[in-house]
Image (cartoon, rainbow, N blue to C red; front, side):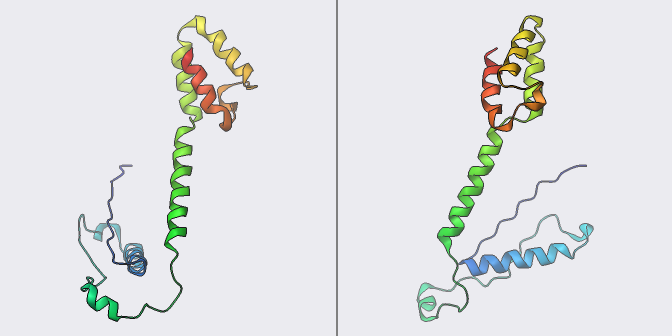
Length: 141
């Protein structure tokens, strides 16, 4: 399967407009056959903002206010979680590194000793919380 990169840029004057744009986008794409989705398009369902003077005359829209700080905090937490998950080596990465080092027959006992140190019978059993340290020690071999 070939994956195609997709870039979607949303520009809005406020959070309510962002919400409307996302809603419109989801509704459009979910009901559209894949062959009908254009390669590139520019669409706006939100009116362009008027001058600042006219905005000040308007009242705030009624409804639930959006807590921007809470949203920013949530996004930061997700980004931190993504970064942390990116730093933890996968079993595949650990195996690849061990195979690379294990090409030298003299280092195989050192790999086995490292597994014993981490109370793991094999690479797949190295606990996720210890993989960063395990990989660091593996790279030192």
